[in-house]
Length: 343
Ligand code: WQD
Image (cartoon, rainbow, N blue to C red):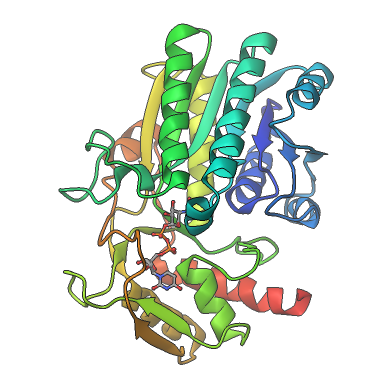
């Protein structure tokens, strides 16, 4: 049983809250920083309901370096940081690029400054497959060429990866792992925590569940004229609980000094491509409902198809997904029905 103290930024967010659960269940002490820009404080209580222990939650903005410095003076002995906190809506980032660059980059720079100042040696960074753009060959590996970002959001992920990498080169006491997520979906099996999109969801699965509970009239399928078997886009959808477990593996790798270099990158996906229509069919199978949807034009910025080569994460992290697509979609549906009771 370890009691290593881990700082989780964005700890009441979608991936952050699920990772906090997995960390606590593995015996870590979790301290969370969140500015609640895109989440709710009661998620922290829900983490307590699931695990029996609520993280310490400090509510402030990581871009406020004075507050962040006071935080590190107050909480000594942090063994690692898992940095989730970021603005993450692709479409919004196109409308508000300056807010995205400032928030996502300054928060990361501030954390790295604090790591240097207070001797925190390890960071796990929440990155995204969006850095690959549309790969020329599939599945995509960690050494596949990166393409110019198709959104300011994606560009902030690429820039932050480079900043973190350069920091590990200049300061050899710092080591880091970037985790490139494919498409996280679903919710904790307890249905006590899950994805909480503010306003109209951008992402496919929350839009499906909100359509099914009657919050949205119909799902718009953004194009069925792609060069794929059924014409709809293909992605690599993984259960958020599988994804969260990978973060525990990454933190343990750094704390136990099992990393093979000071900066490592891992793709986190199932390794299987799934189309929009296959997700819809999965929802109808697990819910027993017919989903109302309409095929419209393509969404600007969408790539056609991507799925992960997960060999490196399987081998080096000892991690692979265990939940199926139906498991993930069903967990999203259970959470979505629960949300209906809250709204
Ligand atoms: C998936 C597929 C849409 C909504 C983005 C970010 C990525 C990560 C996950 C943060 C696409 C189609 C969607 C809808 C639809 N975010 N779709 N109707 O765009 O692959 O990835 O979110 O880390 O970084 O890039 O996910 O769920 O938005 O779309 O037809 O109402 O579903 O066209 O093919 P995406 P998504």
